[in-house]
Length: 376
Image (cartoon, rainbow, N blue to C red; front, top):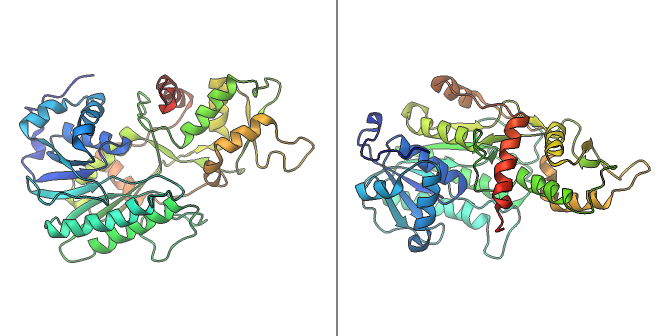
């Protein structure tokens, strides 16, 4: 992969104030940081324990074709210590024009530290207060397309006034964080832009990912089943899902390109963007494709074992236990407004690529080579 020459930033960025990014050692944050640096932006990053995590960040950027060591030397990339909600720097080495807040906890259920609420709710509120102290008046906030929880309604590109029926602590914490940001952005002289991605998966062209949650858990379960005695070639694996259910996921390269384009266009700020796939893949189709790749025949069944003569097989029970937290997202289709997102796609002549068997195969093959995120 070609490494960019940091001495030749793209002219359109000029010498604008720095962007400050949180969450840059995470999957979405690292890819977005790489996209912004390749476009010539100057960036300040907040990372926990820089002495320990600096090399990790540089490695993630190298994966995306960014020669971060040179950018550090030229001052176009700055690493500061900080984390949410624990500690934020008292001072900044450069003027910051906007914060790009990507950091967040993706835990579905509360843990002993208080996450996901501690990071997504309390951490976001503390960040906004810190921005006021440093006279930073713009934020680009990454939320989630699923803040409407189990609501059957079409999800608008707007912030709801009342809490919807949440399915887990993650959705609730992201809704609260988004509300903090939106209220802050309504104050005079402030601008808040909200990005709501659906399930983010690997790069569409290469399958590259550093995050192996969501559909990857189901893929890994199929891969493991194929190699155990739970797999019975004469018995199909019945996947529990709603009749019309689909999974809405988007490739990380598409997400980073759209976000960077919005960040670069002030006229596009102050809105909510549902960054979701316009043609989500039906759950039945996804598992048929995955089953062919793994050699496990998967069939759709709304309630395996709940009716009819055949109880759940040991393999089905194991698969259901492994993927249980995904069940709420497999029960029915989710529908999202994409008006603002479509306008950006038209403006930059970019559309979300369609999912087909080769594309799903690239996601699976990359994740397999990385042992599903586990040490070999």
